[in-house]
Length: 525
Image (tube, rainbow, N blue to C red; front, side):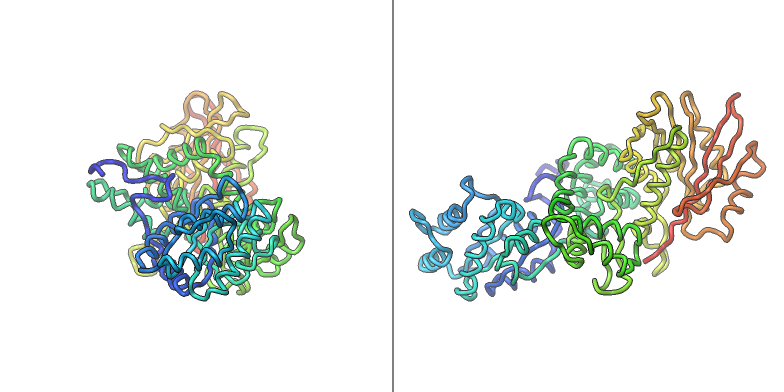
């Protein structure tokens, strides 16, 4: 590859750069080489196909082992056609229909001591109904009767549970479960190493913005790194722009992601469980979770444990400790997959802006642990920079129907947003984000007013604190509002806010009305 050629490809199962899931691969290899069966749960873009390719490479190095990676169904969608394809690939004549036992025995005569079958996209077999049940029952019968000579490993999402429960797969009833997991911050940094190698390492702020927007979903992470490679000066704002482009041009990926995990026609249990975790981040009462999934709808009855495992393997929630603990230690993962919140129905631009900001901040409150990074001292945590919060707000607002001007942010410290909403044509809203008590937070009102220009009809100051002072609203009034040419009133607050002030002043011969939203983001776990 030429030195400066983009090394990232988000749309391939065999990328030039990989982050090996070493522990998972080692466990799967150990299982398969002794003739076991396993299934891999994961959401769209979580790297199931990449891992199967890695597993194929590792197993193929073993003498006497033949490994087949079966990525798609044959054109003739029958068990006989699948078995015939397997037979041809191992050099066995398939002129007449064969059982898997016959194929394996013939392959052994040809020198194949062990055969390992890796099936990608198991959901497609589940969708074919009887095909999936008959095929995998045939394979499982052979695996059990030819001890140690056949290993089977499959990867899928909700369809895995369809094959197991609705279709009654004998194979899945015995197979060992493996779960995909999102990239960690360390794995993201490792994947971004080519930036350092060309002398343009991505900053911590940019890497944090990538993690917040992607949630560590490998496909989304790779997409961001691919897009940033062509950017002259990567910034958190550039990360937001990349994901806005993704949502615009690759919406089918996002819809496919939802179908693979949250198909209400099959089961609404995963969606219900996700809503409970969002409502009780970090400490999920077991009785609330059990009540939410008790009255299930859909053709498939998914138990609570399966729903949580599926959500975790899709990168939608993170679980710490046991699934039986009460309360359950689980919280949603920050990403575009967990955005947006619920859109406001405000009748004015100001009301719509405040309502939508409150909705997004409520979602950020549930995602709190992802907005902290290690501090300078051991065990210390600190909030990510203002620019990272601003980039996340851009994604949230766009998800709620706003159009945020891409040129509004020019660099660090300029975290203002200029946004329009189609319900209010010609009107503009401006938003400034500050972390208390960093930088020039005391002058935030003047900064918002300073961004006022033709067409601006609403402004908001979002002030975030992880350790606010006692009586923060009163302190805020003294520091940020008193002594300025404004009058203000306290507004009712929603649960995600600590304080809300409406400040009104005059500038340039016109009224300037700014909503100040005080948002306490607890450190949590």
